Image 1 (cartoon, rainbow, N blue to C red):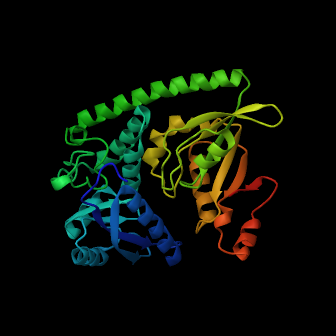
Image 2: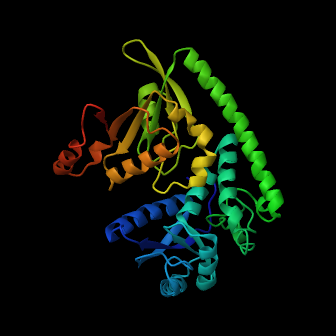
Image 3: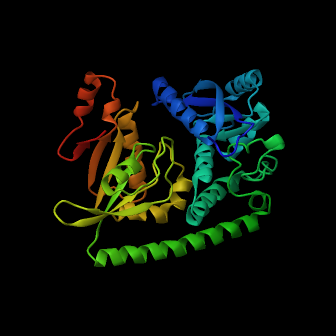
Length: 356
């Protein structure tokens, strides 16, 4: 049972955009994932609209006609916010909000919002706040009303704060640009100090001859479950997106007598915001400096290959593409038919494991 009963869940309309080479089926699959993200953030999806364009419209991305259609749909279902499965420029966001008459945000804000809710440690909260400030800084112009909501506060009648408003509060978002930049500089300095401590610890482990293995994978693929099974770590496992933000390191004694340090990292996702990757870079250094990556894949997912590609994109962004990789296909017991299992078996090679 929830400790806090919320009387309000934000009402959302989703908008996906098919731009070649993306196919319409891909757009629908991506909207399915976005709906899961919105639900994780604590809101309800009431409708979805798909736009098809050869190129993005400079003013609104989706075009004025589609924006007006979104306004009509939003009025019909009485939505609070429209969430776009594309990255919007600050100008596009402002133009859309004028047409829609309501808040317009992107997939990026939804992911940042989930991270803001799930950050538990001081370092994790600082990393998320820095990522949010980097994203919001160019959007302050003309967004005073949207950002006047106190982060994490309850609205009228105990209503839950809208998606995109959690995290840094009004003292960070309504002050002038100079003070905002000053706050970002302070966060960067604090995180760099923590990063130096982590690097010193990593050097000590290296001198002691301790090898490091990092568990990586798409969000909710089963990384924490694997860590628990291998090390009896007792890490809380939840069947939801981005349940793990803070890295955990445990000792694993191998059958041959050697011990390694096994780390569980934050899950990755398609279009993981660059601001988050940059803010969490010091935490993710353990991945790029590992001796081996254990890449956990949800074999029962709708698009395992797409998730593998998304994870490898982030690994390349943090400089970990050179680290040897062991693939672990998890949740194979959830595959619906033997035929699909046979299709999945085609991926199996000497560097692949299957798990349930």
